[in-house]
Length: 290
Image (spheres, helix red, strand yellow):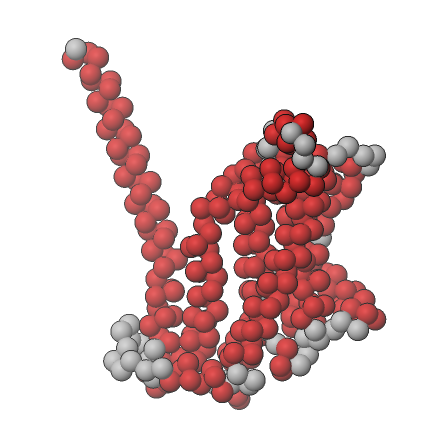
């Protein structure tokens, strides 16, 4: 018995050490990401004088909403910039999900001439730095009369999200056995009904992943809005934060800036926490098949 239990005990000890090391590393990494968020949040509730003082303080000596009230009066008002970012993100999510779901289903279920070539050409877009084609896109959008509009900017953002989304959705649909749809067709469903009632619910994690990627990327995007938007009332939240950080005569109001950062963080953080279980499984399912 002793000879049999000794290797088993060593195995258990090894697993315990490995697990402890893993959790320590994960906890340290999580703390490294969490500390700046806590720091910014605390600073946003300081008075202007305390937020700009050196050396800085960790806990506000006087809790204040002064910085948030400043944002309400800055430029067109923080509400306008948040609304523009929200509308842009929702348009990008809606357009990206519709196109990538249909394209991914087509690549996964149908055979047609040039299928592999078309799919490869779609993925090649990922290799093109999007900043290099923003100026030609601006000229096209100007010709179409879509510059300085949220819709025009959303179309540009959707185009850049398509390659990854199509790749992920194709793999998600390919992970579903075709026999499920064939059984639905035998039972009297049409092709569209089988797609809607059978395949689509099973790729929900992939859809959520594409939507989450689109929302976060468009919410945080700075370069494209900087080029395509020129009116104060059409600016998004990242543009407002950069203008706020530059300040008048180079002076930076760190309290107001960090209050704006908190406002920018909250929607993305809540969305990720709410959808993270779909997000993780969607990435796994989309990466298993190539």
